[in-house]
Length: 304
Image (cartoon, rainbow, N blue to C red; front, top):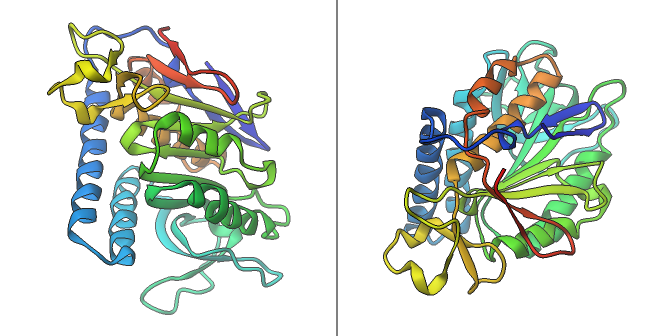
């Protein structure tokens, strides 16, 4: 089991440490379906809606709906801004996971809550429809720095995560964007759903992150294929492991979503809002094939 910690927030990628199952377990098939629904919704909305703000709202609502269904009743989710006692204000956040029990609501007199004390926030999620280099290295950098500048006094700092429906480049390039981030401006974890590209901070690594792309060939398929070999083999599910025209793998969207959801629940568990130990029995059954991305070397195919 790989354990990643930032401060007092432990994250585990236990999903990566088991042998390959004979057939995908129910939990993997379920989250594969959830991921595919999110991908289709985002792509269809992008094709129908010209106003970028309208598409952004729809993309935000879709992941808020998914997270809302897995959060324990001691928490809730909303968009809004975070403030501290010194008057600092975060950027507008797409999704905030909030405590329902530990802190009173100071700004809840209107129908829509929009402002939250930092002490009541557990996790902040930035949602992107089509993640670009500018998004990662400018917009997200600015928001993470504002987030980290909030005065938390004796409380744990809310974790900052990113969920992107898709990205403007291939997985290796996206991984590079995150590896290049300054240490003071890195989200704790992220997922690009379309490519199942998941990254999480690893303080034990000189690279800063652990970034993987789970993949799962169907029965009879090779682990990878050349782009020219794909033809009609559900090409939308295949992504390049290195350069755009090189070897392709069938990405495992369900495992990517599970990694993201597990990271969310680990944040809540570290603060006493969720019990996630029982999930290990299910996650240990999930396929663990993945492409592992490092900062300076070519991707590695792990077949543990």
